[in-house]
Image 1 (cartoon, helix red, strand yellow):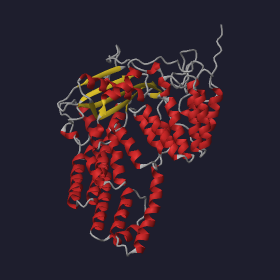
Image 2 (cartoon, rainbow, N blue to C red):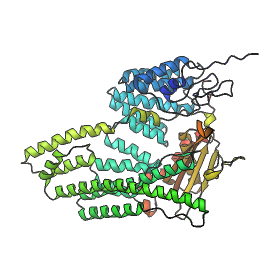
Image 3 (cartoon, rainbow, N blue to C red):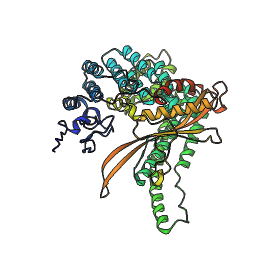
Image 4 (tube, rainbow, N blue to C red):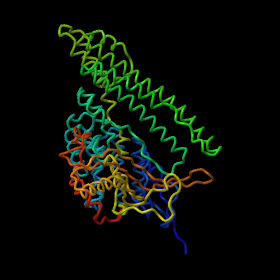
Length: 562
């Protein structure tokens, strides 16, 4: 007996160029399940549920046309994804009306649009792309309303909230942007930085000063199954990011102090930032002398490499601080009645401008005498010119928007809501204590913080983040608390690498884990540290009610394309 094996007519590059996923086959759509041939063989380039980079503009549209022509008819969810992707490529080509037409086709292709998991993932993303397209077509109000309505359908999910912000665009009403940013910052403490920067940009300096102690540096999403060397490199990148973050934000904090007339406090903040930078970039401690000779030499080599990197980081961070020291000095000079002199200097300065320069112009305009009409006109013209370029910088790229949209979800991808267990044949090395599929918790620590973790091997990042918050809300309810505060979080992506003579020839996804450091609180009696941060409290009953029906007893979803 002979078996006729049919391979994809469209190349894997065309499928990926369209929506980021590899080629589909008759056995799998490559997006929600692995695309195989004869149910067991997955050729290189066929979809393994991992989403990659797409091709921009007209070339991406052509890739979508080829993939849609090749796609087996049974894979309706993948068809929806390809049509949604083509809409984004049309947006990238400046054709919002064509994008809206493709989104109509995508909505019509959804054979099971009422499925709750489809509706909160791929279906939700169609609405968000439509909101973006409406804004680009000139209906900013309609686009914003549609985006906010979409977010309300999944209000505890990072991807849907970030997508909402991008769909709304930077010109949406400031109050609406701040509302969405606060919702996001409750889930992701590093996003408090958005609120801090927006307060500075808007001249709400006292608000920025109050937000400063809550700021947390960004970290890369951890990726497991990378070598120890790559883990060291990632740790060094996170270290560098943290040092740069502290230097730049300390400078912005000092600027806010100067803008409110607190000159001595501003200078003290800059001096403290210098001291902190020196401490942060000291050489790491020497290796443990009890190590074997070979291991000691190895660790000493690593230490030398890290010391060199810290010297480079210190130099870069020092330049950042020097820029802020100059900006703070200029702001103080304006306050001393020398607005006209500062304006003349600003006119001669080239380079990219940002919110600090706009705030300097606002301060100049506030200080210039009304009789100096020439200087006022000059300052206003500069402000209008710089504001245009700054606004263009804030517009999100479509590539970034594409990446943050919620990924397609099905019931097969939901891990069990139960305690996690280690597999019989567990990993070795630095991650040997990792659990698979399910939840676990550690703590509470002395400061009352509990770490809640959920892992899912075949799940999307959004699912795992949702379930971790669900478990945290569940524990808070069991403890008799009405609220929780996310103090910190860490998200990890797992992969499986296939090597051939030491060379990685294939990488496949192996799920995600989210770790939330949470504090269970009584909203009416917050701890002293969070007494002025009541907006960060998540209502645990509201979160549990929204998430439990989806993940504890999920409704049956039809198999993708079925």
